[in-house]
Length: 403
Image 1 (cartoon, rainbow, N blue to C red):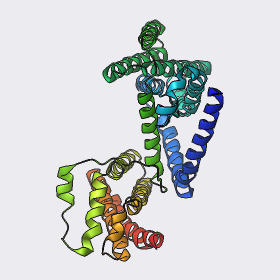
Image 2 (cartoon, helix red, strand yellow):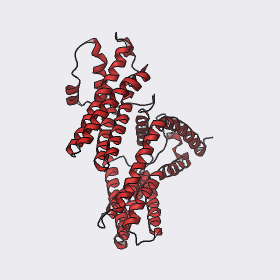
Image 3 (cartoon, rainbow, N blue to C red):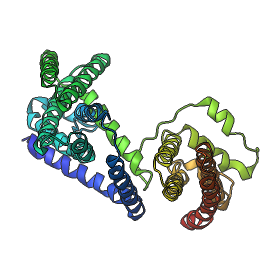
Image 4 (spheres, one colour):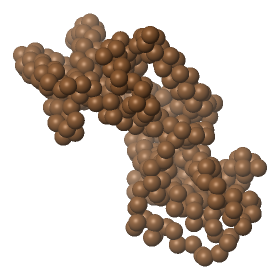
């Protein structure tokens, strides 16, 4: 006899085993040390910045926007898979316990966002609103938990709605109301906070009414949403380990291809062309590289000490260079690459070449940022140190890994 509760426990156990295997690769020694250094540096300068913060700093707006965003981002993880479209739809009337457990799991797994937001903005709140008791901030966190659970339920109800535009409008309206509630609550305007809460309640009841008129679950939408989130996790894990479940998306980007795919037409440049096309058109590498450059540039711009700017420049250079090594295994499932009449050494040299080129480009961008900021000594040190690091990383670590 079908037992939905037991079935969820089995699916949940398999999900934990699957994600735990890749999390061990993501939080390896290199990344753990880099994250520890990064968080320690941010915490130190965050505390130093709070000592000099102006009294008119818009803390209520910033905390309200972040807390409202955390409450609004409440996806439901159903752990459904494509075969369930065939085998579970006949048992939909027996799946109430399964989806109840899925909602509880979704809420629990997202509590880390609440904890991170509460820990990050606690010092800012106590600094700006020093005259308030600490229990007021705890009440704000409790309110965040209530609104997050309410948004989770509303998202679950709206998953019965086929119209994508209607779901999007509902999400936007709830997000605006969430931000308004927390902004008015933190700023001390309880009347407006109460009105915003009442409006949220109206939208909440509207979502229930709309979903109750729908005949049943949209199983294809549930599977699509869950597969999309798992693919996002696999793309992250693929930066650190080989992920056979990853379904890579290919994007056209014709103008970038025309610019960067111009290589000499010869056997020695076979993998140069392939790696460039893969870097540009794959849904992973170009976006990740650009994000790391932008985040690294922002941190270099914000953090005051010169020596820390240089360290972060080298740190983000290491992170992007390390991630680009995944290009070597990107086409591992395509058999015709083994038929290329090209030596393995040429393929390895091609990867080293593109990693070095991307590293040098990143060094030039960071150096240009130092020049724009007028820190010429930092520009010289970053350029020389970055080029030296890139050469040592490619000819040392990369070649040894490929061998």
